[in-house]
Amino acid sequence: MPDSLPPQRTQVAIIGAGPAGLILAQLLHQHGVDNVILEAKDRGYVEARIRAGVLEQGTVDLLHQIGAGERLAREALVHDSFELRVDRQRHIIKIQDLAGAPMTVYGQQEVVKDLIALRVEKQREQVLFDAPVLHIADPAGERPSVVYEHGGQRHTLIADVIVAADGFHGVGRNTIPNSMLKQYQRDYPFAWLGIMADVAPSADHVIYSRHTDGLGMLSMRSPTLSRLYLQVDRGATREQWPDERIWEHLHRRLAADDGWRLNEGPIIEFSVAPIKAFVAEPMRYGRLFLAGDAAHIVPPTGAKGLNLAVRDVQVLAPALAALIKDNDSRLADKYSEQCLKHVWWAEYFSCWMTELVHTADDPMAQALALAELRTVISRRGAQTLLAENYVGVSARPPASVTASETLARLT
Ligand code: APR
Ligand code: PHB
Image (cartoon, rainbow, N blue to C red):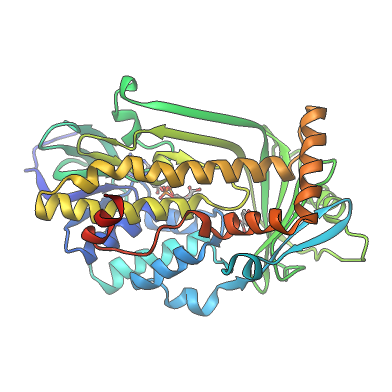
């Protein structure tokens, strides 16, 4: 492939058009910092990728603040509680009363669609789709660059800073020498089987049901679309899980003594995702910064993944603005340390909640988790902590966007 084109230039090269890359691009735009987004896949693929769908209030506020909240305000479902089920009994955790904030159900791919439409149709700026980054050159030097493929040609983009918002399997993290990174990983022995069912949700809040066969979960995407999950073995396949078996397990695991009924409908999407926790430290190497899944993965219980990516880029945008516009590196130098605080909070909470509602092979772990769950549902203090972590208020810094405000908080 020829490499004859002259190099292009920008201030920030962003790799990846997931939530982390797209939101960062908007924040940089607000700070007056030029940026280019390079995305390996096409627009249709990125917009159709189904992921979790629960937004903390801080995430909702940020989407409004960057101008991506219009459809969200119309279509999202706002919940003031969620439910824990155990021993066929229902326990409502009133998050709004206990923690002063609701949770908003709005599919991640809807967030992604809104962000792409904002950039492409409203602002007439580009997202370069079908543009996989092959290589990052000189990340620790003064003039880093990315080499990417697009339209059958190889291109070079020189930038002041490169942000790898390229997910867990991207090139960014792998560019950092192993000796510079500390990586933590826990692989759970189970996976989540997820379905989308074309049927009205059977409740108006999310339900986590702990059952001896494993977790059964009910969520939703709209008044006519249910999202349901089952804890299954890691290698589970569609062949092993025909529709009848999925519904049989959902009915059994979600059953309650008060006669609550689960609505069944056509399954329009099926996926199996392994459950893991992962953190890479630090989240920076010279002029290369990691954000979102590129740096960390949380187990999906509690749906912190997208919210965590949002927190990263909220810290990163003012730091890059100060670095690039004022040649002030103080915030950038604190980026990793500051993010790792909310990253480890989210890891702790997501792992804790995962172990609370899933079944394990180890009988001791099983009995302890059940005892803990019974304690949580019977003690208001324990419920308050759960609610505060669930809605994210326990880890959210005060909302400020300017570099000087953030710096004042840090120093
Ligand atoms: N070049 C260009 N783009 C790339 C490359 C590459 N070499 N490698 C990966 N990408 C793209 C992927 O195609 C994807 O669109 O980077 C994007 C990363 O997006 P996400 O995986 O959505 O990651 P992130 O933006 O950090 O989102 C965090 O998404 O994965 C969920 O659970 C996660 O909810 C969390 C949120
Ligand atoms: C979802 O709706 O996809 C969802 C809801 C709650 C979770 C995880 C995922 O804890």
